[in-house]
Length: 98
Image: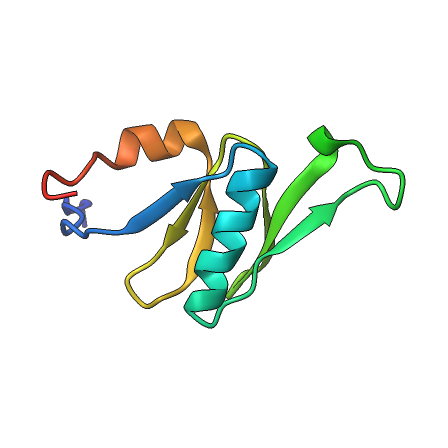
C-alpha cells in the first residue's frame, strides 16, 4: 500500500507573538478572557533575568514553553499552544480580512 497525499484544510486561527513583558501580559489576559491559563514562568528559580522567562502553556500534551519570539496560537477548539517562529512563518499567512 502506498501513501496517499492529503492537504490540510484551510483554518483561520488567532495568534499573538510573545516578544517582551508587555506582550506577555497581553497574551495572558487574552487567554484568561477565553477561560484558559498561561503563566509567566522563570526557569531558573527566584534569581531570574528577563531573558530566562518563558510563557508556560498547559496543553493536552502537557506543559509547553514559549520563548520570546514565539507565537501563541488559539486553536479551532479554543485551546492555546506555542509555535516556533520558523514553523509559524512556513504554516500561516495573514488573513486578508484581518
